[in-house]
Image (cartoon, rainbow, N blue to C red; front, top):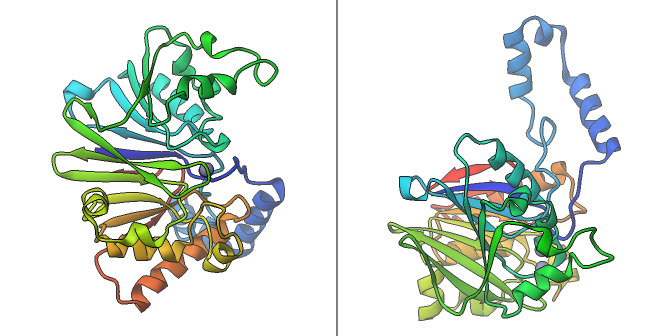
Length: 316
Ligand SMILES: [Zn+2]
Ligand SMILES: [Zn+2]
């Protein structure tokens, strides 16, 4: 399966401000030498040598991730986790693809704004040839999704989304062409659900908006079945440890606790996700460095660490 990141910011979309863009450009100009400008190759080499926080950005959209499968039976289907503002980009990108998606399966972790606000801007939602299955363990998901589009909050109501919509209240695993999607309730104000996609022994976990607690580390049957030996986890790593202490009970985790969690469950690849709106690219890549330092310092082996950014794609 291939996991694609369309929105990675938590709490609210966070576009780069004009002053941050100007300061990136001026820092790049300060570093450039006449030799770097000599040829197309030297210019490419110079740009490739810049740090990712300077020549690039993690992006500003709120959470949205897609999962697609390398299987001809599923070529026109797509799984989506959360409808943050990143889903707008996803919808536009899929519209431009030669191979059209006709069936979306949208799983909702919970209904805080940053996870649903992109739905009214999801172009395939207005296409009557498209089917959308929504899934949530919350019984009245149709009403909740509809309410964000009622007058005066949005110019058209959810009925204007002309796609064939099915709202699935789920209590157990979901089976999509033999891919099993399981779920688990996590610690977050109002509750949040993590999902695990199982395909031919490969397991991808989406676990955003969670303030990890001791029970998440307990090696009981339920936790073991869900977390142990996962190939890839996208996990809430919103805070530094100091901030997590200040913001106790706000529902998000310190990155170091997320690393401990991945180590506890022998997870092979951890992606730090739900970036704080107050952190700029420089700070976020600094946090990634700190997380790598922590792995080394604690002698934790066997975990790949990645910072979520828009456009990132990981195949497992
Ligand atoms: Zn959130
Ligand atoms: Zn939330």
